[in-house]
Image 1 (cartoon, rainbow, N blue to C red):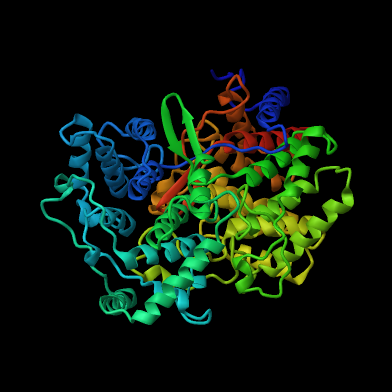
Image 2 (cartoon, helix red, strand yellow):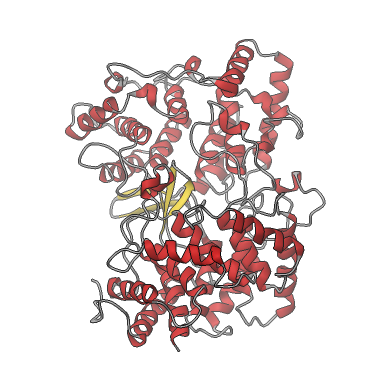
Amino acid sequence: MIVTSTTMIGAAPAEAQEALDRGVRRLLEEQRPDGWWKGELASNVTMDAEDLLMREFLGVRDPTETRSTAAWIRSEQRPDGSWATFHGGPPDLSTTVEAYVALRLAGDPPDADHMLRAATIVRGLGGLAATRVFTRLWLALFGLWSWDDLPALPPEVVLLPRWFPLNIYDFACWARQTIVALTVVAAHRPVRPLGFGIDELEAPVAGTAGPGSGAGGLLDRVLRAYERRPVGPLRRLALARAERWIVRHQESDGSWGGIQPPWVYSLMALELLGYPLGHPVMQKGLEGLDGFTVVEDGVRRLEACQSPVWDTALAVLALTDAGLTGDHPSLVRAADWLLAHEVRTRGDWAVRRPRLAPGGWAFEFANEWYPDVDDTAVVVLALRRVHHPDPERVARSIDRAREWTFGMQSRGGGWGAFDVDNTRDLCRRLPFCDFGEVIDPPSADVTAHAVEMLAGEGLAADPRVVDGTRWLLAQQEVDGSWFGRWGANHVYGTGASLPALVAAGTPVDAVPLRRAVRWLESHQDPGGGWGEDLRSYREGSWRGKGEPTASQTAWALLGLLATSVAAPSDAVDRGVAWLVRTQCADGGWDEPWFTGTGFPGDFYINYGLYRLVFPVMALGRYVEARR
């Protein structure tokens, strides 16, 4: 049920306040007893298909889990027979193939109507040969594709020194963890037949899945040649080092990096290295997946990741923007929980910054190896809003986080999420890496959050913050927007950059800011909201265009409110009216559209709490500006 507003063009302050109050009540209801918030992270059915395939590979697939997972996969199929990577998106070949194979594994016959429609879509999109490398690797595990027809990436890569191109630390942390495990799997070339074939997915005129051209293709040919005759002692040394690396990087919750891809590949790699299922590492890994599993209404689905630190920090910002005082019990509990999850150990980031002291926060419940700049910046902003009974404890955590953030700044002034100067473009050219971003260069949204936090610490004049501000200004697009690496897309990047630049002292009437304001205003939907379809990552015609959503409308409003020189503009009033008009009776907003980004162009996320925290944040700032 949607609460309707009598004002269609602009929202009166009273209506905005009422909507804000409803949102605050809902947000407080969502807090867990020990202080944290977490919305479900929805992605696509490859998570569920690969979970079933992994369990089949390990010999632990359960019939009940299989039935409920298959029910979820079927529920996500569209009328044309395909599966997509995001709500309302185009058919995705690799996702459809993985879903199809998982359903065959679950017992769905190939002549069932939904399977026939899926097979038709697959053939029309190019068949198995046109799928991504990771999909073909899953097929190879079960004899449905030849290992000889996959790009090579031998485990000897783990032996490369850190100064040598394509060493594992040249890859982003998420790719690094995945690659180390996959090199072990690929070195063993296992084949565990499923008892059925999938010839019905072959296209009449199959595409090619060769090594490609250029530097990446040449390198793949060299690696393939080595793979045919690896040096025995070197291979054994590489596998032993990879094994130690994998085991050492397991988190306390059983995961690897708190994300699905390295988790499932690491479990399979260790099994191939001889680890029995009863081994503590394997047990912890398999049991940990239960905490990432959502079971409701007879279906079972897997979260690719979880975001409690991020969600909790955003909730604190939203509630304080809404007017809760810093000593409110909910905020103090949240601060306690955040303080307890500070990362005080050295992770992979220390490879590039060996003298930097640890400090900061990760995204997940347990991810000691990979704190990130984005979470750290937002947590510091949140903690500064709370009147904690132990201010010295808070100050010490913030001091460590601030220095760690400075230490993670890349050359040129920007910040990446997890590593420093993680910009080796050659990694992107490997045919093995044809899915998702594999490096972690500085981005506008992460840099904006770092600049906003450091400026809030009174450091706007610090040369390092000045460099960050200059870098951010230099990243502005010709049209006035900023690219959004971790949120969709230019609305997110622009909504993050404007408050940061203002916090850093950029005049609100400066030309770059006025250009950004014009871009936001020109992309407002006639109904008052903002939306940007995820296809904007591949197709420029979608930039700033799409079905309006609560989270994206809030991002635009946050940017516009930060740059208001007087009373909020007509565009802001209409945006607030859209939020008021579309609010549900329970205080939240419906948002089936995905607005979070894992890999631009390839993998997207629907953050369950975005549709609540960001509108509350925007409404709170609007009500304050209208006073």
